[in-house]
Length: 322
Image (cartoon, rainbow, N blue to C red):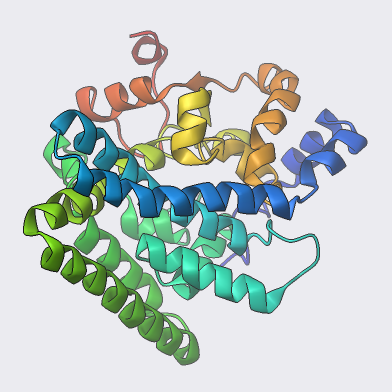
């Protein structure tokens, strides 16, 4: 078994990538600005607090429905903030205690055990491209290429699907890590049930609009669409194309906290999320030289549900033009 399925195959690619960007530009892109991270995190916290208040105060569907949709994305995006902690992309110098605290807070807000997310995600980076070793691909990607089954990921069924995948992955973890995950998960579940109980105590209708719809119905859609833009449309024969190149707009940058730049992230995992857009621009000539195709989310949805695309595979030229 390879220690790292991806990095043992990406040596030449990594050399080409470093040559594609001037060293001073690459250093600038790796520069961490904690104030910028916490400015974005602060905005997310304000949205997390204010959106339920808006939903409670304004029962007009034209107000509470878009607010609930945005709230679902906000909850999802705490996993993006947790992702920054995992890659040590927050602080200039290593801050282990602060990273652990931040990781727990971000994970709790998105309903995740930060210890499991850390292990799961780093394994994903190390074993990218492998059907068996990459936990996301092995345990979470749909094994049935059927439209009805794919649609389950856009519903509350995502939660048992996800936690089953996480449990399978965790079965091989050391006992100490598994105990830490259980404690974190119990704490997170207790926190979310407390929030849901408080909302029900205030008003059952508010609980439905301000928690159940954002968390159980919007979050799965945000999760699935984000995942479509990661590794479902790739070229398995070219390591440079093992992630999907997305060209997001300003709206998607806001809705997904720059996490749509997933190919760039796998190329340079230590680049903070707020520098991924300029990183993509710096890589444009590389993409052209390697014929890396780009996609929009609307195209990916068409491939996924209409053409019933198989995950982790390429699409034909005809399908791409459709």
